[in-house]
Image (tube, rainbow, N blue to C red; front, top):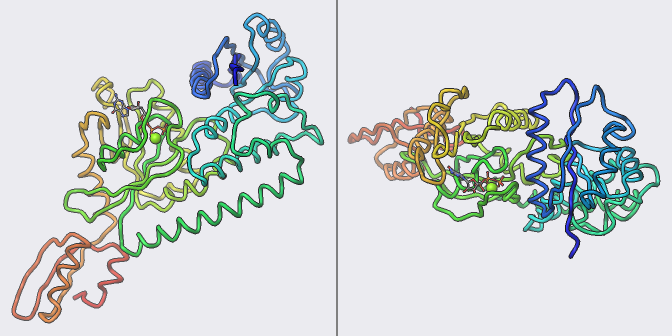
Length: 414
Ligand SMILES: Nc1nc2c(ncn2[C@@H]2O[C@H](COP(=O)(O)OP(=O)(O)OP(=O)(O)O)[C@@H](O)[C@H]2O)c(=O)[nH]1
Ligand SMILES: [Mg+2]
């Protein structure tokens, strides 16, 4: 425990990439390292014509690292890219300190954050899948798993020491346990569906303000903090919108650039909550210099996850810290400009959310004979009644119906 991670960071990219984007990603790696409890004692960057198959980075940089390690008393190196098993082994052999990659670092943070049993299982699965992909033959002697600190934490710490076949069994067992969790969640969602509750999912880059917005919209107090990946497990809360039926909104884990898809896969149970949502809310921290890259990262993950068909509201957040002129640089529609901390723009956002719910619905005319006129109250609770005409025969209503509601009230359609 007394071991402090003294970390050297290596930013890498290809010549074809913008140097700024390599530096921005490195700055994020710096933040991630500190989030994981490490101290950054030095950074270097390299742009390569192509990746070096055996060490990822070039010979010259390895020599620089060999000098820097004793000079800075570094005891860990973290590379801002994914490393193959061979690359990791070769680097560790030469540098004689554990060498980690971005994925291991992110998973280490997840491991520290996971609260629920489901969260822990998902992290363990992701760590094992990542570990297995890096196994080189029978080589299991990675320095990264010896000692302590970053890269060694996690619910399945010990599982990482065992062999491939045992890992296979372990993976199956975790998947089975996660299946059970998913089945339970699915039952909850079906209940909500049966009750025709429209649902929103907050998605976006880590630290964009998703949890703060959830709190603002629903008067809740879920954990929000100025740190990467403050949220890991999903939370669902009720939200009341103007002239709308009650809706629910789910907050979940944030996205980050260079997140391997197979890790996204491990968080399936978590992401399913968002997958089932009727409407996505994409939260963007417009005060960040990085907002465009961050928004793009989220949009491409939305595509990768196959959610592009869903309606999306783009919520530009942290307007209290953003020059107003920046509003004119954004493209996506529909959109809202808000401050989740001050509450600015929240009423407009709620109106927009209500509008999106309306769009899910269509207008229909229904007739309730006088003997069944009390059903109008039931309908009124479930949706917006646009017009109501009472006669001696009964009540004619014009109402917005979702496909599910349409099914329920079909026999009263005129
Ligand atoms: N100034 C300002 N800060 C905000 C605003 N919204 C959120 N923040 C701050 O941004 C930080 C991150 O907020 P969170 O709500 O935890 O962000 P998140 O998107 O849930 O982040 P993760 O769960 O880590 O992915 C916190 O320090 C918030 O107080 C805002 O509108 N203005
Ligand atoms: Mg959060």
